[in-house]
Image 1: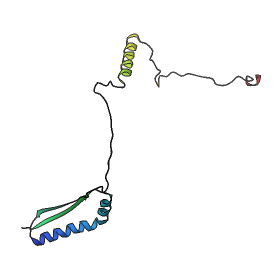
Image 2: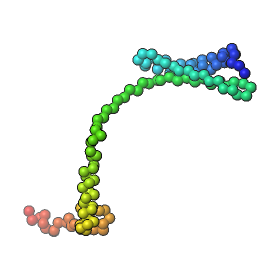
Image 3: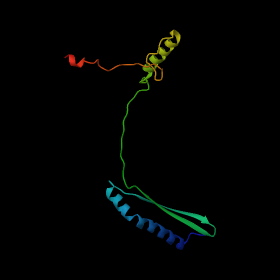
Image 4: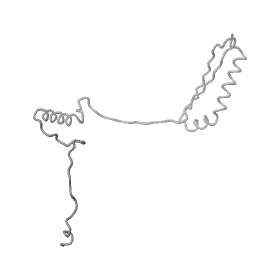
Length: 127
């Protein structure tokens, strides 16, 4: 198996088909480009029994994305929640040792507060 004139002409046809297929996209991308616009074309040859398989590929950038993000910190910077976590841990340890009631009621504790919002009859009419 050799790569001769006929093989190269067939490869040229594959590349031409890709360029024609993407002509409008290439034109739009070229018009958007700031300076030089590049179209990368790849051609692969691979043995396939008694023949040679060819694959042509095309690659170009249609949109340019430019972004920036900044940040600043120090390795010596304290964890933002370290002080709060330390206080919670100390309180929990004190509760265990002294059997203090929890600092805040927990959901599902079974405690129900009954509040009566009804006004006495005639209280509104006393004014």
